[in-house]
Image (cartoon, rainbow, N blue to C red):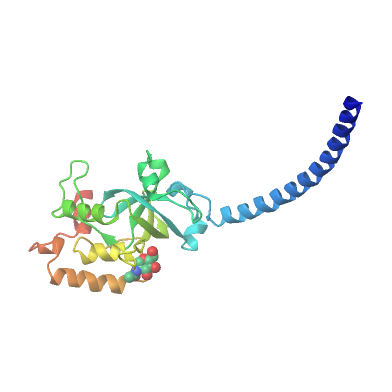
Length: 237
Ligand SMILES: *[C@@H]1O[C@H](CO)[C@@H](O)[C@H](O)[C@H]1NC(C)=O
């Protein structure tokens, strides 16, 4: 008796459960569909899709001058850096990013818009005066920091030319435009060669460059300043 009852109970309980399961499955299925469509839209809008490196930046993203947020992992020269992109919905903390072992393929190579900095020693060419100071300034100012980069173009080295802005902090509740600050510090001169991108701030750049010259900041301390552009031209030929 006990065993029969028991088996009956199991049977009825089992069939009731499977009907319930079917309903749950159906609801789950629809839910999943909706959720994945939603995620698809988000991913498309780069809210959750990580742009690993400059190769993943499409012409469409440049066309609409998309802004990518991320953390500066490395400063190469005083006019460029590498950024680890963090999509808007990323949960990764800054410290976790900085602890990562990153290759060049994991970061976006950004060339600062509108400015040139003195050249450091490269391929046997001597460094320009103040190149190391400029590099130290940029390292100190942006390494490990959160930045927003407005994408303006790709250059012939496959880097993205971008207008970079340091995010606000609790003790500095305003943003800082990196090209502007580099120039203000006397380590940047306005880039005037082909493919220059100013993102509408050429006048402002001129103003801070003149101020830096007048106040003899950074590289403007020298009597005769060889502009990075002239230096590059000389060493190219
Ligand atoms: C600095 O760059 C950002 C884009 O990242 C731009 O929106 C902002 O206006 C720039 N700042 C100045 C002072 O022009």
